[in-house]
Length: 101
Image: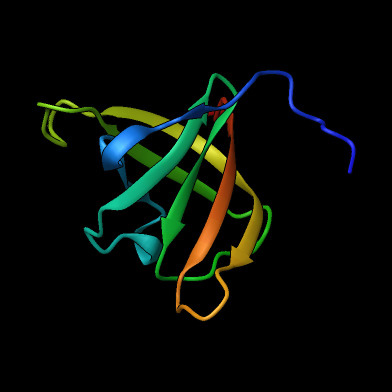
């Protein structure tokens, strides 16, 4: 498999970073998704739900010792969604993008 990433991934230790989906409303459920890895181009997180590739979502990324009120907001497009074997969970890859007004 050919690596297409521009940036290296940073593995997030001990479930220290989480995110929530804040838009669109039909995807918001106040679930905290554990971020597996992050880089300047996107994130990878674990979800209880399946997302279609190309779905556009706005995330709130919560850093340790912060709340979602202080969270960083960013738009992303789902690039992959892989089911975890023998679990009802998915690994979701998201590429960040600038949302046009």
